[in-house]
Image (cartoon, rainbow, N blue to C red; front, side, top):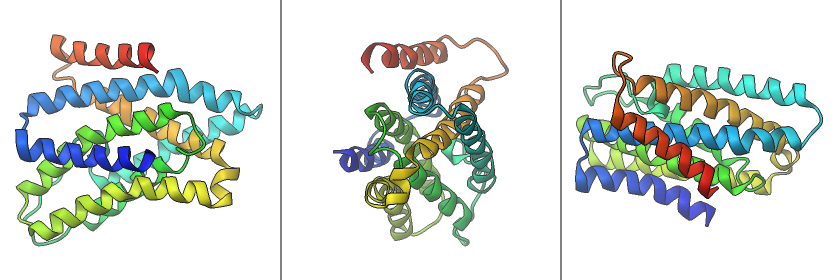
Length: 225
């Protein structure tokens, strides 16, 4: 089920672009919702989980900080794709290898602790991936890359998190250090979710629709997970 949900989230995001062609305003609202959901799951579920699983609180805190720093480094190569804003232009002649590698590493690392963590982590990643897949698919369609290249990009991106789940379950190293790995992902999620919420604001003005999307993401976490 883990593998199916992770692959389906990317597929759903791509299909939304191909069939519905959502406007930028709708995408921003989806991003605000996913950011609020991701942050709520991280604070209400993942943080308590990693801190109650061990008495070595300092180590957990260090790995959370490492996750924040690591995500900052990855975003310098992915141009912000993880939080829904690809700040780059392409003429279709040069494939964005760094963007592809960074996104795949990010997706792979997300999947590593899923098998050992609470199911809330899985749902946080699924909700996060849908709007990211929308933004990524939209970007790829607007480039001049061949359709085979676009399909291959999305195909391998969709497989990275399931691959992380598989290796996280089968390789003893990832099982032994799943607490540290989960703490690392907590740091990644804290960075991504806060950036999503900050970037979804326009001129720091109150936006009722964005506020409702954020509130819905928080309430959904509180009452359903």
